[in-house]
Image (cartoon, rainbow, N blue to C red; front, side, top):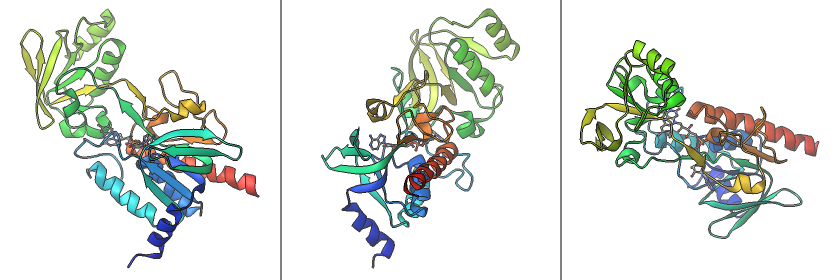
Length: 313
Ligand SMILES: Cc1cc2nc3c(=O)[nH]c(=O)nc-3n(C[C@H](O)[C@H](O)[C@H](O)COP(=O)(O)OP(=O)(O)OC[C@H]3O[C@@H](n4cnc5c(N)ncnc54)[C@H](O)[C@@H]3O)c2cc1C
């Protein structure tokens, strides 16, 4: 027997006009959905189901959910958001978003369109994998983006950093907090300054400039880093700071400005440069954690609801 809540959700799916459309229904989008559901708003969450951490076996450093799989956290979150009858879900990719006289119109890949007064992007970012065989398969498992998320599990293990120049220096100094067995792999000639080299040497961080051919791994767990000259180094973990692109191109198509680093520019209320459009989670900040995605999502919901109340009252 379906609950009143789920019946309401089904009913709402047939509606086309919402107070708010949220594009992206992972941690940040679900946090928006919960707070707006609790504020009695008619909300549509459109989600393509492709979060950036899908490959990681355990997610850490989010209170009450430490060590759960990313999917477990998202499933519980979704179940809880579904309890609010004014929140509806549509699976699939939002392909376009345009400004209309009264707000916004969003189209999904089936051709269906939905309208709203406010529009929120919780769309995340997409990491650009380097052209190194077996790198992508290890991403989030033993090739890591963040020591706060995964550093504890590989503490004091044989660890590598894949980076060069200032980024390599900064990442090496950060990761030295978690292990004393650290090597910086520059994958070609080092662009470190003499001072940086000297400081890394002082902390016994080796620098290897050999070009990388591939990684050797077993079900995502790195075993060796292999160089083009055929030599190899054993490793337990490798950190890398990857370039990224916005997961969705709709914010830019709508005119949302990006920061120099490539994040959607938002103010402290998570407002973008386009009136009525907000953004939250990974697409707005380098503070890439589930906790921050949830936090900025909640802030966004409160600010959007405030704006709606001010327009209505
Ligand atoms: C490999 C890896 C491991 C991580 N491990 C941890 C960890 O252990 N602990 C931790 O706190 N953090 C971790 N993080 C960071 C954490 O996963 C992110 O901060 C968090 O997922 C950001 O949430 P988000 O909702 O902003 O974006 P995402 O979770 O990336 O979700 C974005 C959602 O938007 C959807 N979407 C995008 N465009 C569209 C569109 N046009 N239409 C419809 N839907 C769309 C996507 O399909 C996706 O479902 C990890 C990140 C990575 C990459």
